[in-house]
Length: 550
Image (spheres, rainbow, N blue to C red):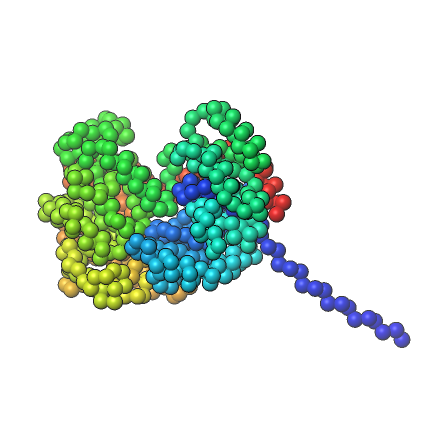
């Protein structure tokens, strides 16, 4: 009787690994983050399961993931562009500057410790490289394509030996690289050729083409330069992206914020471009005038040295009846209808800053005259009576006197709270409650020394934990004009934001506006508009060929 031979056990098939493509820049702020966002949405529109990745991000603009962890805001936006939930694998290392040459190092969404720049480079970068490779590997096992964003420039000679953000990362990912340059800065051809000259031959080979960003004018006038560049380098220009004004998407860092502030400084304080200096405070809008021509509410944000999460105010920048300004010096104060104390990475030092330069006196006088004030996170902490930092968690100061708007005492501890919240609330009596959501990121814990009114009732909504019982949140003055909250993104809640703006309008004798700006919907439409714009000006066929080749 013949015996049947045993069947051989098949070898397990290797798990598919997603492809990669990487955007690097000739410098910081050339538009890598926005172009990465555009490519993420383009690939998703084309049916590819896509994820973003930035190994190390330095930014004070944070995003809280659904499981309550902290990553760079840009990677949160890019995840939204991919229509997926953000995870810390998309930005495993986040550096949050605390003071000059010192940053809080956040690893997979949790603070590790504060490092001085040299110590971080010498003591932690090697370990960080391993964390970065593991995070990228997990993304490639989950997604068909990972769009990688570099940081700064790959030609920083003093940083290359321990690089974890540019060319070494491209090697680990085996990624084709697109080099992005900003023509708006001037010297675009020199910056591209100079970057290539400073790279090693194998790094130069990894760059497959160039994108020239933020172009203004007639592209035909640029063609002789493009032809020269291609002949000089042997690499193609994959696209020239015209500047897209009023994009409506959040910025990654304060470079763009300072540009906005410079624009506002060119106008007389307390006015907008269509007003005389006294019109904002005295003249009601003409009901027959188009909305764009009507006078606007003047809302001033204090430009703190360590301002964080300024994306909190993006919805105000889109409101047709608001003129948003950033104020750093008392002479810029003007006659604001409301003043916002924003978030900060160093509450104690930034409070000392506004006291020293006179902004605190301006703010207190504004409130004494019946003005409206809003404080968010660190700004909310500043509105209390005392701030205590005996362990020097945030600064070198043991304690500081607050501005005294509310009977609150804040103690800074090493425990950092990062959580998403949702609930309801309102600012004014006899007004219906509005649904709200947002997120908290802060080191300090506040306690009330006396009873106060609370504008919100919220629950923590982190997916990895059972929903906590609703609790009161924030503080509210009796007249409803001064309020503070730990909730970032509070002004992204459309109905609540419009309620607040209408109260400011009523105080000026202006009619209420019933036009509700749907900021979340407009943001997603802005991503689509960006993707369409970039697709129109990029050689996508060539880019797909680069990806498939690898």
